[in-house]
Each structure stands twice: as structure tokens, then as C-alpha cells.
Image (cartoon, rainbow, N blue to C red; front, side):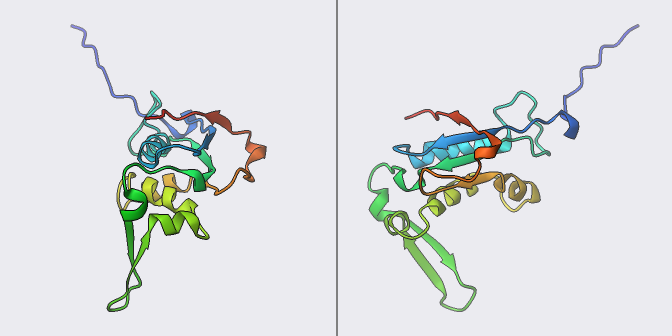
Length: 152
């Protein structure tokens, strides 16, 4: 009597191969782009995806200041943060953030909120994301491969 055991594949750290990807955010929709980036950061686009390991790729996003938002989100969408003091709630509109000093924060916030919440693995995966407002980035030595996200 022979029994066939079919086990679930779990990748080992020695099996993982991280690539560097370059994404141009010019004229991309924020939600679609950040959903794709979150999927790549987690490694769900690979057949060797393992939920408890960081098997995603490193992503460099350029032209973050030229991202597009659909509908009236540019004027109406508001991000809130709290200073920790009583009455210390602060708000920032997306329009002000994109035209301000750090336009890359809009993409970082969108991607961070699409990753799993409050876990060390999510923090580790989020560190593999590099967002820059303009064309230039300091990751030329890694030779990132240009990826064109799906336009919707």
C-alpha cells in the first residue's frame, strides 16, 4: 500500500531571489499603481510566494509628483494624523501634499495601507519601497528593470 503525500511548498531563504524594479508613476492612477506595488512587495506575483517570508522584490518609483487621482479626490481626499497631544489632530489634503515639499508621501501612504497591518513582516516589506518625486534616483548601481504597470 503506497500513499502519495502532497505537501505545500514553502520557500526557504536560500530559494529567494530579489529583483530590483523601476516604475514610472507619471500619469498613473494612484489606487491601481499602489495595489500593484503592494502585490509585488509582498511577492504574490511569484509562484514561490510564501506568506510568512519576505519574498517580494525591491521597487523604485520615480515621478511621484506626477501621479493622477480620479474623480474629485485631488481636492476632497484628506489624510489625518495625530500628534499625541490632546486636540492634536492634523489634516493634509492630497493637493497640498502633491504640490508641497514631499509629494512621494502620497504613494507611500497608499501602499503602506495596502500591506498587512501592524506586523514586523509588513514593516520589513515596506522598507523595500523607494519613492522619489522626480526622474533621478540613486539606485542605478542595482540596475533596476523597468516595469510598466497596467493602466486602468
